[in-house]
Image 1 (cartoon, helix red, strand yellow):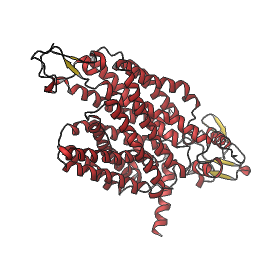
Image 2: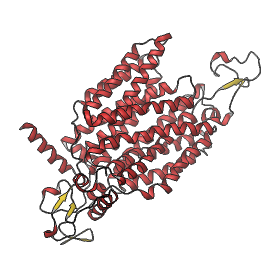
Image 3: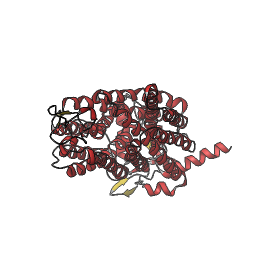
Image 4: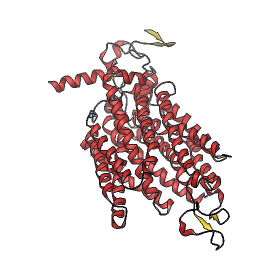
Length: 517
């Protein structure tokens, strides 16, 4: 018996050595005794994934709040002509906003003509905040706060900053609050994704991870309905932020921390108790003498029960994870350029904005379904390559189409197919990236990949404004190059979800020896 961190521990997790019969990793215990995706995991997965809808609210609200509303001429004088297609050449007093000045930030603060760039600046700063927040909360989620703790903090910040945005007195305060909202929003998706999928067994984790994005698309569609009823941008920010408060009060109390995080932090008793609760809720039983262990501890004579930690520096130091991180960052960046770029092209069509955004959100769902079905059939790597190249080919075809007549319609069709393929890639990359890294650094690595995605999101609007066939050409290049880079990633289908850097390195060493043999 020894003392660790102020607690008395037996060498084998609190029991005399003669009673120990089996030491299992989390994956092995889920497969053998708890159930890989039973009633407990289903409830936990659905409740946790609701946070994705919150991320959609805070991210996509800019489409409606920052839009340029319709305007009408005042009187019938020669100073106003709606055929001109814009208000920049019309003298003040000859026109007005049809829905009133408070319908959007553009109409309230006059973000048109020479000040139109300010709308893009707000969007870029929001995604810049997301990029910083993803790195910060990715690290905190792996270390002190944990998955649930980090999710709680970002939801609280989202609710506060989102509602505060509705009371912005000036454009510059509005810009600051959108940056802060982006900072907290950047941690929502990655914390929710890891918390939802880590308690799921290895054979069910892929399809579960792919299903999280349905909640994001549902959130976009729901936001369209909310925006339809709340015409004022200030009222819209309040309406889209209140669900974060409801999530904090009504959902978070029923969520559990990840057993993997408990385990790597040395809190083995809490991890084991949670696994026992999962088994009971699923109608199973955790036998006596079966205990949790880190993957590297199963190879020792005793379980250390000590805290395991890691950081982005550990990822960079290891030759195995370093190359994986570089590839994941590059692929996520290119995927985001295409996904957000094509989304902006579709959303900016001259159609009903509420219906258009809702239809685009629903149109992504078949891509999620197809990739989820093929995930465990084709594997992560071939599917990533295929969806990236699928999108790249249709973007390349779109770049060759002229923007007039029937060619314009064909180009639109190429764009729809391009975003269809990239939506599948975007969905796949979360589960693929999470499986490439061990528990101790998973959120830090996923946070870096998410930061790269936000950088791509920042760049996308600038690609779109190039006009003509150039944006499609850029999107095609990103898709094709991204698919080529995916060739250098390993396959993770049916591979263990490692807990520690040492466990992963040992596993890769055994795999390489078997492959060589």
